[in-house]
Length: 153
Image (cartoon, rainbow, N blue to C red; front, top):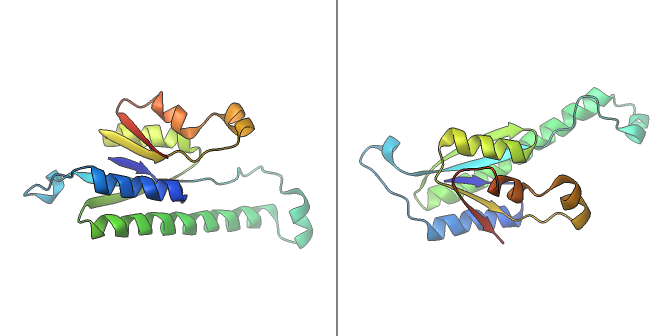
């Protein structure tokens, strides 16, 4: 089971739903037991981004990008550690994966690589305009992964 964690209440609720409703097989050998893979994507600004008025602070663009990356890394650790703790409290085998970039592509990639039977994610609604322009992450994944997809609302 892959659970996409973005730090929202909906993704945490999705993990709670998984732990309360799915049955995880415990095998004699730990490597044969079912597991949850918690996945988080860091959204990092591109190296050529224009930070405009922030430059008056005397901080270079690269320093600002590095600070944003560090903040994203800290957020990823916090999100995944809280999810990992929750899984361990339920005595479910758990692993975490972090990638940088577009969550739509990385979620689909991880589901395929891990040969997941189920993808669980929250429906973290964007506004109508943003969803129209970019499409929703959950909609993208529903149409591209080959396993079952559960969208927690």
